[in-house]
Image 1 (cartoon, rainbow, N blue to C red):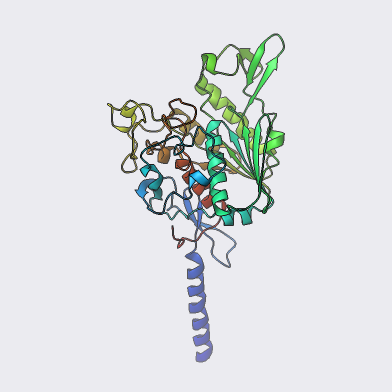
Image 2 (cartoon, one colour):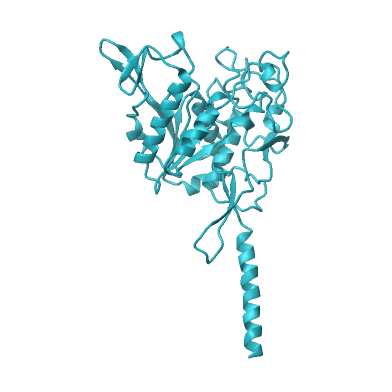
Length: 379
């Protein structure tokens, strides 16, 4: 009897060690800011509030950038800062270091293998274009000799890595909701309509973004009237318009997306850097000649208007199916990462980002949220 008890005790010790090993491997959930561990032999998943990929600081890493942008064939002149003479390239050497988290280094070959035959679609404005081209460069750098096919039509640009059958698509939509020309009225922004959703449903990964165009007015806005709940008016409060449009998007996601097939992300608001007072340097008028990030992890002016709206809408959805890429704060700290005058449009830009640069980190976090990674994964 004593030997039986001894064997049972030995078995329990081995089992405990095994469970401990299994429990030491974590999955990073980018949208919830949680570390998740799944205990073997237990049908439930235990969640531990611990890890937030969006809180941290920027650190110098001499292994960066993740690729040589001069070898990437996909960068538009708006974002090609090196080609257009950006003199200080230290902005390329910063790596995002989350507080208490391990952010795995982007692995383009793993991405392509895991998403073989799949479609990844960015939907939004020119900041989605910024993000889209960053992902293309990250993937191309991993397989520089792989064949690719590029197609462009009225609203979409797509690049297919033919050796893997992976198609990366940009669908241009400034508001996500529709703009239609109404007879005898003109161009109408329809806050309750999303007709292009039938195209978006075909993708396996959707990354949405909007906000930049909602505040624009006068000659910059691409509509003449705005429609909300059947009422057409000349204008309305733009913050409220954004809230209505985003709720339309949320309802569409809830009713139209097959979550067994498609993963949905919303890219948080990308900040601008035109006023030094926002980051504690009131004498600085814009991002020109700004060469370093904000030190630490806090941004003096706080978060921009749309952030709370986005978080509220996502949190209020009846199904937890949207992953929020909450990149606003980490991007606020990167006042050094914009093209400023170093772009092919000969304009001044503290809105978009250089490629290579900050959008690579957005895609690195997307990568971390798509793939299960070990807590012991080295950066």
